[in-house]
Length: 263
Image (cartoon, rainbow, N blue to C red; front, top):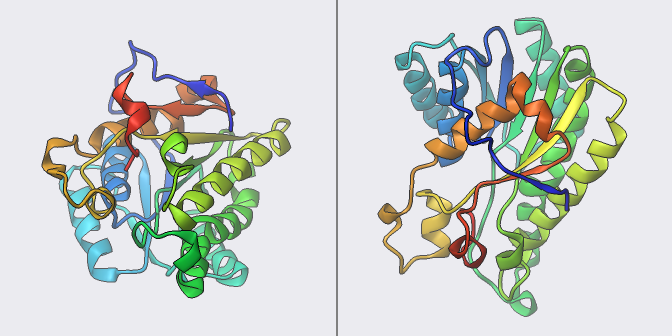
C-alpha cells in the first residue's frame, strides 16, 4: 500500500484548478463518478463520461451541463466486457475527438454482496475482478501514451477501507481492491521518470448504492454525499496534487473511519 497523505487544510477549489484539462472518469454514472464529473467540470475541465448505461450517462451529462462547465463527452464502454482492444479503440477515438488526455479516474466498482469464499460463485468472482481490476489495468495501459503527452498526466485509482476489506465475507471485492492498491504502487514506481503521476483515493463512508448494498440495515442518508470526495479528486487532478504523488489520499475521519468501509 502506498503511504498515506491528507488533503491540505488550507486547500479549497478555486473554480479554475483544471482549466483546459481533459479528465476521463470510468464509472461516471455511479455515485462518486457522477459527483466527480460535475466537480471537474466546475473546476474548468472537459469531463469524459465513461460507463455502460447510456441513459445514466445522459443524466450525468445533463447535470454537468447544468453546472456551467465545459461540454462533456459521453463514451459508452461496458467494463464487464471491455478488452485491451476495446479500451485502445476508445482512447484512439478520444484522441481524435479531443486531442489530449490529462487525467483518468477509476471510479467504477462492482460489489455483489457479502459472501464467504467457500460459496462464492466463480462467475461472480470473475465479473468483479474484471470490472474492479482487469478493466482498470487495460484502460490505464491504453491511456498511458496519451497521458504521457500531457505536461502533467494523472491516474487516480479509488480504493476502499483495507482494514475492513481484509475481514471475512468481502470476497472478490476485497481482493480486487487490494489488487488495485498494488497495481497503483507498481505503476507509480514505473512512472517516476515520466510526466504521469499516480494516486490512490481512499474515501470515507459515503451515501452511495454500494454502501446501501453492503450495509442494508443502516440509514445511508446519514452518511455524507460523494461531493466532498469528488472535490478531493479535483485537488489530486490539479497541479497542487503533485505534492501527493505516489500516495493514498486518505479521507476517512479519524477514529471511527478505521471501523467502517469507505463506500
